[in-house]
Image 1 (cartoon, rainbow, N blue to C red):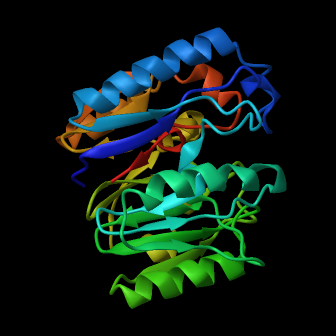
Image 2 (image 1 turned 30 degrees about the horizontal axis):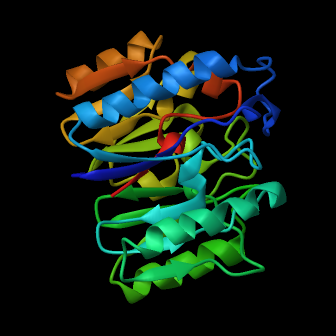
Length: 257
């Protein structure tokens, strides 16, 4: 759970033209930029050095940089997003990562994999099978992890309403503790973990983000924030309204290692 670095990408002027299923209306790009600046400041408050990549006007969704790679402190794997119009985002991310990691893997066709479907919880990785991450992509990552001594478990969310990615519904806030939405709380994959269950009306807030000594949480979800504090965790609440309109959450906006 200790991180020292993060990579982010500033929202581009065409951000509002990205993919979304939320039905919450078009985002205000100016407000999204302000919210992104607050997010970057929160990363720094948590002790991370932040690399800010410039906007990429060719890819409206490119601020959701988490989907382009899976990182640990030792290695990086370039993803292959399941939305075809996002696959071009990985080229520039691969160039950034190749200068930082000696061990760099990649998901290959026919595999698809979004980083938002990958949750590291202690030694184990949970690999979400979604409408963005297919079985071929998840198997490639599982093999990559196994070669490095890291166990993994696949979790199929394709029939779970309201979840674009696995991390739309779970977050690891300690090696043995998960924040989890009701729809996943009884899943056998999570039976050995302590669970902080998110009430249905606060489901969006399940995508919180543990960064060193704090947990970033979307503002406006007091029940979950109280539960996190009751578990001894310090929280930082951030306004995520414009990113929520584009199906994005806190983890989506950075790559951490």
